[in-house]
Each structure stands twice: as structure tokens, then as C-alpha cells.
Amino acid sequence: MQEFMKPALLALAVAGMAVTACSGSPHHAVSHAGPVRYSSAQQMVAALGKAGMPCAGAEYSSPPVVSGATSEASCTLGSSDHVLIDVFSGNITNATVVANSQSTGTEQIFSAVGLNWWVQANQPDAQQIRKKLGGRAVIAGPWIPPAAAAQPSADTPWHAVPSLMTPDGRMAP
Image (cartoon, rainbow, N blue to C red):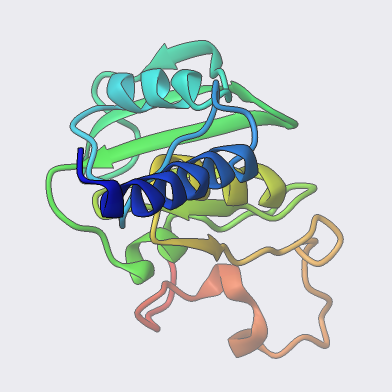
């Protein structure tokens, strides 16, 4: 080896060790250059496990409950008791995610969103899932807490009652 190349190779080796030392645990480090596409909920459950976020008690829905999904699973993950994983054949839009993420329960739904998938969980878990699986965003779904979802009073104007209107502005059946 040429003598003039040794310092450059040594500097490269030191830089590589520094990057490795700063990356945290090598056992669960997953790096993605950008949003990732998955082919099935089963593939996503496996990817979550490899990323250190096991999807306990995974159950697969066939056919999927979510309209347009080609593959679906539910499980317990991290601090989220009810996680929903959906995979689609094509890219999904933010509007599709929001339309399928409304909560009238005790907590808001957050979706880690990729090119053709989403995982609905609580906010901290959704943020970790996005980072570890190569998602493009975390989107908060609309939340109507149970107290706010209670029946309207007689003084409530009809147009202010969400249950009377469909998303396109027509009267609900």
C-alpha cells in the first residue's frame, strides 16, 4: 500500500467507528433512506419485530376491515394496547388516513404513515414506528372525546352536530 494513503484510510476507519458508536444499539438499529413500501401486514409485523418493536398477539383480518386495504393486522405493541396495521396496493393519501382515523374513544389515534401503509397507535409508538419502518409522516386523526360525543342538547344547531352530516356535507341516514 502506498505510504501517502495510510492517513486517509486511518481517518476513514476512525470516522466509521464514530458513526457506529453514535448509532445506539446495533441490535435494533434500522435505517431507511426514505419512505418504504411493504407488501403485507405480515411483512410489517416481521419488520417491527426486527426493529425491536414486537407486535404481540398479531391477528390478521381477511378480508381487511379498512376499505381498500389488501392486508391488515391488529396487535399490542409498546404502550399501545390496540394497534391496527393496514397495507394498500397503491400509495395512500393523508386524506385517506384522516378519514379512517377518527376516534370517539378515550384517546386520539396517531398513524405512522408510509407510501402504501399505516400503523395506528398512540403518539409515542407511532413516532417510533415511523422512524424504524421508514414512514413518511405521523398524522393525528380527528378526536371527539366521549364527553364531546354525547348527545347534543335541544339548543345545539343541527349543522353543528357531526353525526347528522356525512363527510361530503349531506344529511346522514
